[in-house]
Length: 244
Image (cartoon, rainbow, N blue to C red; front, side, top):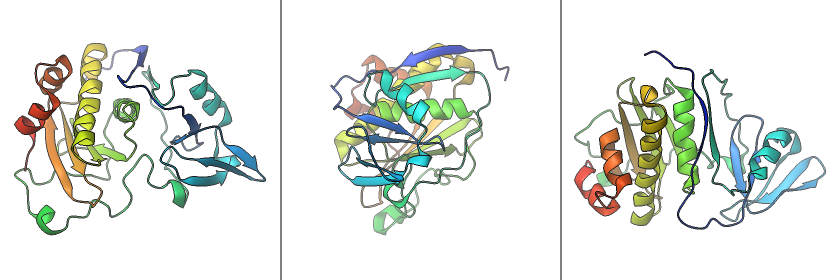
């Protein structure tokens, strides 16, 4: 596919008012959402995460310039999606134990148990070690999730090279519906701004806090448009499109 030069800034705004937050950007490219700016104690930065966990990380791991830039927008954790048609280098994350749950599913949490271990009508849908082929499209969906305050996820290539896979940990039906809205909003925005770079499908696997599957979806851009436009409600979308 021909890659057209594309430069723009896309802003996501959530409908509800975000709590005051402070974004800590790490040198490995990952981000942590804190309740307020960290305090430096010796070689460590001390802060409370948005979910209330007291955390410390080495100050040397913090990208001070990127952190300052992220918080200068005064958008809380609703952040800009910066698109530049270049290849970025995505370093392998090396989070501390306290932060290992942020931005990705904790190891083993998606292990199937009991009824969740039964095969689905779409075998093979799941997380893969291979990344999606367009890192910036991948990043856009990650930022779209975080703009809806969904921080426990991981992404990869889907069952086909043109498919993007997203695994999201959710807490109950309301958060499941919010995750569908986050993905569909990002998908629709990309359709408007960069249609030549759209994933053919977005495969979504919801995982509950017990590690069991809470819903499996294979979303097209047409599906996303229905939800974003309000043609269908999130509840109806779930019923019509969930795969069990």
